[in-house]
Length: 232
Image (cartoon, rainbow, N blue to C red; front, side):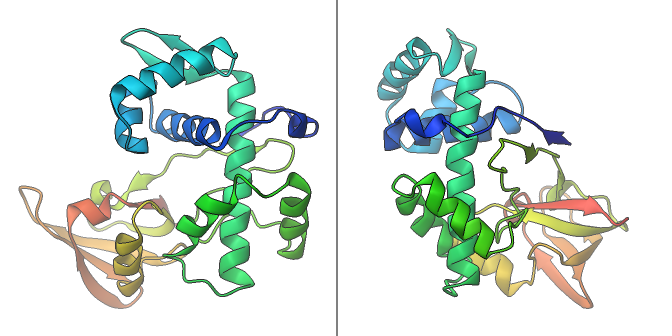
């Protein structure tokens, strides 16, 4: 599913601090998983104290960037969503440029982009995107919002839930853990890889997966970091 939002044109006039952009990006990510972003979920995601999160949430709500209902969490407003997508576009274009042009390993680009995303201008990001041929996805398979605020928000099933005996294609992997990315890379579980689940041990046991022509074994925690789509 492709979602449209307000174009980023003109949003450069809205200056947001790096912490605010991090909050909006985290809330968007949590919302994509379903439901509102609770204080505890945000505190865990951002590694902050719940009291600090509560104060920032109230501040962002007063600025019209999110709606907050006590005990029910926060949701982005249209303005908050636009700002979050703008930051995500910068982050994912930077990841793509670092990986494609500079050859930075896919397990390192996330941390580098986290540092650069708050400083890069929209003009620089657009030039990077143009140099890359306007990619639709970053190195980890996450969709890149267009400069007009359009993004593919299709939600794919995790490998941990993928049916036994069914073939699929790896669409994306979580980029939150560099060590996990190195592990998944060693298993060749990258976007575009063809897989088929052969067996799943009971009681949250290991999963046997055919990756291409090689049989691999992966634990359920790592499998939840991989998202799959059915083969067309």
